[in-house]
Image 1 (spheres, rainbow, N blue to C red):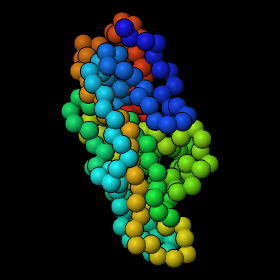
Image 2 (image 1 turned 60 degrees about the horizontal axis):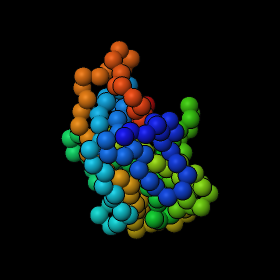
Image 3 (image 1 turned 90 degrees about the horizontal axis):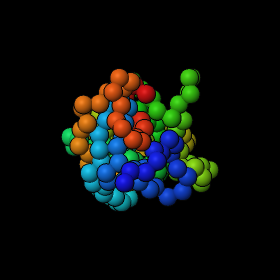
Image 4 (image 1 turned 90 degrees about the vertical axis):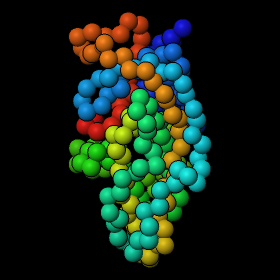
Length: 186
């Protein structure tokens, strides 16, 4: 039986699933709601295959905007991701090449090695639907060159079945549904 919807999907503490199999989600992608039923959940542990290296960076240098292909999902899947910088870099997150995440009107927050020490709410969580590309850019804020600039990603993979017969706001699914902000144009 489906539970109450998660109106606030960003939870403090260790990463945990935001929905369970059998529950309905509304995936907010490109300023539109797409509805789906979750069929399967799988954890993606923090491991070397999900580490992006932005490469060597000179002092005060910025990397190129890099597509995070390691965290793209297959068709009818979305990923719930958390991230942590492993080296002395500050990373900005983009979903789509022009849509910065973790931002206010004029500034973007960065993720560094110290973010997890200062951020008890784990606000570095984000969602990726199918191949809605996420991008990252690393900055070396130090006065010395770095040989690598790595960021680790971990979270959950959700396999879904599309519920294309529903649309927002015209025809909503019956029962509760969890709102998931995915992809570009948030």
